Image (tube, rainbow, N blue to C red):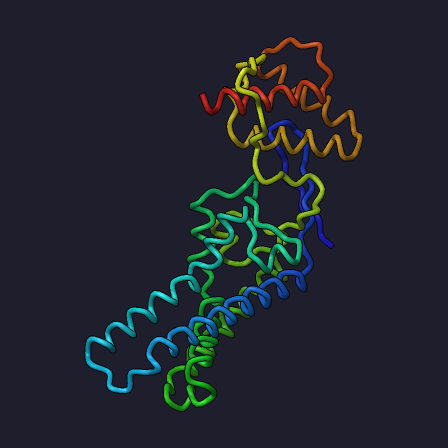
Length: 274
């Protein structure tokens, strides 16, 4: 299993475990199965709605086509919706224990998720083939001869992504490279958790308001360093980060490194919503 190290602004490298290829492959297969099952259910619903009407009018045909289009929308927004709402995971990724994060280690932005989604060319070509096969059966290639070119195109794009994943140091496909995201194991060392926000009481009194001078990326790094140092019992990591922050923000504090970093996170969470 390969490890990628990402430097933070505190001169401490975070370590991320890049998932094995089989994890990504099976995650994709699981997602395709989920989509295929949805298509079967959607197809059954549509057949049930129109099974009793054997004389379609023009309006019926338009309604049928529109309804068919509506049923296809969840298919094409599946990955985008899942990764945004499930914090970098789809159903397949969650089962296989992998997650999408930004190259800096934090949760990707909406724009990063959208870029990845728009560049899933091979996936959506495969999905289109599955949809047509489910709708028309194996004779679809006879009815639509040009579909063979789409099948060839799907394998070309899929092959290109496989080559990129295998050859890239960070295991990135085209969408990941352009979106500046990577896939990591959810159990990865040094990985940043789903969000920097933690529960803070309404009557909390901030101790270090200077924390608001740091960027969101810095806050992500602080939380990751705190959690990593606690899990490993590594006092030196927390101490190094604390001293770096104190010097940068000109803070004087006698708190232990662990307590100091935790107070900083609480201050940020309280002040960021005020």
